[in-house]
Image (cartoon, rainbow, N blue to C red; front, side):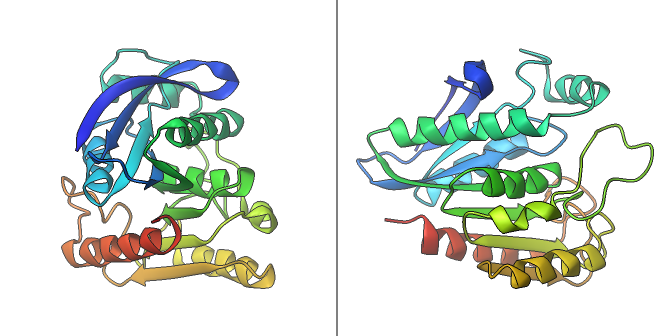
Length: 243
């Protein structure tokens, strides 16, 4: 594969940093926009992008904090973004749209675009899928889709459940049964809305897993849940994004 840091046009045409990982060869390959979690544009999320390239996808990870803290470390950039209330929804959609358009501009692209995100990125993956025309979306324990964040949260996130009617593509949701944001009750509410609107979706909840069970460098890591979750993601994207 080839992996490099590039500049793409984000929301409003703003130049933003992004990490591009892609298979060597002509393709055509499906595209995945990887939306980083609240800790930011970090090494672990870049590893996820490279994993998708290894699976045969063009993966593009936009740095959502490029404007707040250009050139800063992931920790400092995330702290700056949190202090400003997080990433505005409209800007997030524009940045994801710009990432998708960049992927489609590559000669090796098959024109199909999916999104994936974790924690805040899971919510943003769902938001992008309800705001743009996508081919697939994965929400890994995205908070504030059904209920707002607790009082005193450093970032501003409005619930998105009212946008279910606008969901443009199949949705895969991966959740922990011990998570509180989103709780199993919130997941059930989201599923109810998806059913009512006749949307194509697939949800899996893992017992003994809480928030961030995919994170290999955190105590929350649950290997069995993460392994099964990756298998579900690979199958899902293979179904909707592969040539």
